[in-house]
Each structure stands twice: as structure tokens, then as C-alpha cells.
Length: 243
View 1 (cartoon, one colour):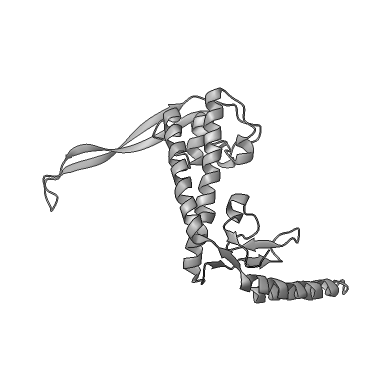
View 2 (cartoon, rainbow, N blue to C red):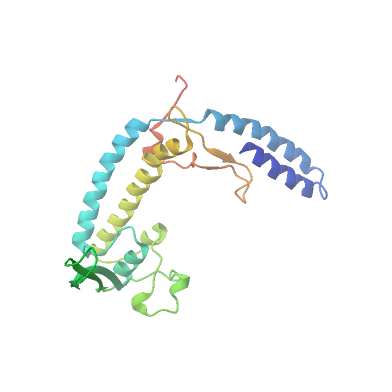
């Protein structure tokens, strides 16, 4: 990975030094940084996989409780992880549920005499609970009828919405579910799965540290992201240095 960083930097320098050779000094500094980043990637971060897995089990129980309450408020035909469903619930719309219904019997073949099923679509109509914010209609649904329009349900949007006590509770459940779900899937369980997938030993994560990804030139981290972990996740990254 560091070699790829080096090649990108070298290519950039070949172009830039034609117009400003002073940038070569910046390039030399970046190359020095590469040595540090290479050692950081090699050393990695020690992950407490065992305790993280135990924490994930507890958080999954919290997710179950949130999903039960969510179904009590909006019905069990709705998925709390579907942006389209959330849009229909909050802004009004139709959610189609596909169920299997008996449609006769098989008359021949290995399944002769067994019940044959066919798909049946049930439409669930939701009245608007909140008014959408300006310019939050998704681009691919602007020409659709109101019942099929999809509005943004991103975290920044949901936090600005105003409505009844029911609407506020639904939004609160959605936001908390997303927070916990991400903590479990991306970090607590996701880190452990990535360690196995990559064949990393001793529960050590080896993130990539990138110099040439962000347009602002700041350092970024990927596969996995070793920079933007919340406090709940940081507690499972173990220091290998004595305090």
C-alpha cells in the first residue's frame, strides 16, 4: 500500500515540478511521512475481539427492543433499515408487501399434490407525519407521483424534522437503531470479520493510511477506517504501551 502511495506521489511530482520546482521540497517531506505511515500500518492496532463480541451481543438485544417498539408504532410490514420505507412512513407514501397465497395444487411432477403458491401484493398506505425539508426530495423521484416520491432520510435531515410526539419517537428510534447497528456491524463484529478475512494474526488491525485520497490533503484511513471511531469503539483498541 505504501508503494502505491509512493507511485502516486511520484507521478504528481513529475507533473508539478515542471511548473514549480519548489514543490519538490513538499514531495520530500511526504516521502518522509511515508516511512512513518508504513510503520504505523505494520504495527497496527490491537483489537479486543472477545470483549467486543460480548458487547455486540448486548447491543443486538437493544436492537431487538427498538425494532419491536418500531413495529408497534408503524406495523410489521416496514423495515427500519430501508430508506424508502422510512420515507413513506414519515412523509407519507405506499409500501408494498409481497406475501405468498395458495393458488391451487401441483398436478404432476415430483411435487404433485403439494400446494402451489403465488405472489400477492398488499399495499400499506401511510399518512404524512412530518413536512419534508426544502430541497430534500431525491433526484430519481422528482417526476413520480406523491405516493411514490422518496425524500431524504439522512441523519442530518432527520434531526431537523419537527412533528407530533409519535413522529418524534419514530425518528428517535430510527437514529438510535442506526447508531447501534453501525457500531455492531462496522466495528464490534466488522473488525473481527475483517481480521479473519485478511488473515491478520493476534487480533491486530492493519489499517491503510492514505496521503493522496482527500482533496484537502489531510490524512485518511481505510480498510478499516482507523481514525473515526467513537468512544464506545475506542475502548476495544488496546494500548501496547505502559502508561
